[in-house]
Length: 360
Image (cartoon, rainbow, N blue to C red):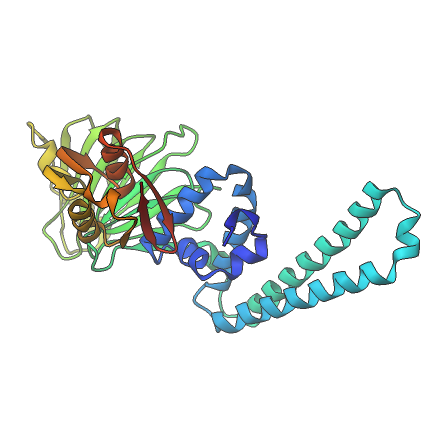
């Protein structure tokens, strides 16, 4: 299937693209991010399709029914386009070829937009109890996987630890860059001085401009910890009247969790800044995949990567499976790990339909 020829409607109706939009399948997220990087001309259509998918998957109504209606509407629009082209030959022939093409294309485009708009309008208006703003909220959850890496709409990257989740505020990357974290996550934030990146936890708010840091904020645990590796962050306890605490690289702020009202908790909130003292690797060790290899075939290495990242890896051809490698690799993503291996003994790989395919 040639995804590069997809229309907006094709993207919307593709189940793997839907999983990418909702962040439900890490493998599909990796695949479509790679596709977007390789086909930048399709980014605008993908963004439009993603907005439609987010509306259709906003936890309301029957999503399958909505998508079926969308497919039926597109089929009707295709039949209408054919009918228009057949019934207007005399009028169209009087136009220059280029203008005739534009006229037919404009009508067809208008029909498709109308179909999608009607499907969206019908979906929204049949759910009056929920505000439209709710549709733009996105939640990313690691579930039982060891970790889940997500590229946010602003280009920042977060890696969620097992059983953690991040909820983006309405209007993320439009009017704000704010999210709420429950659990633990490693952040690599894209710089944007005009739009600070803010992470809310149960105990505090962490504000950054562009940096690398780790936040540990498990519900019911004794403390919320923020460890800074690069850049600068400020941490303000919820309800606090004192200035925020500024962290420098290789420092960690520990905020004790006190079960009380916000005002009382803020007034008595024990907060302390500690030096990491060379413990940087321990603070974010859960993020990194440290791959130790000693003259191992690529087939065995792929099995390790499968287990670590939870993404199926298949081979096309036997020869490439026997390529052997030695060394130690630290990587935050399976793509980076494979690229590092490529430098030693070249092979090619691609992400397709929720799996990675390796060939010579």
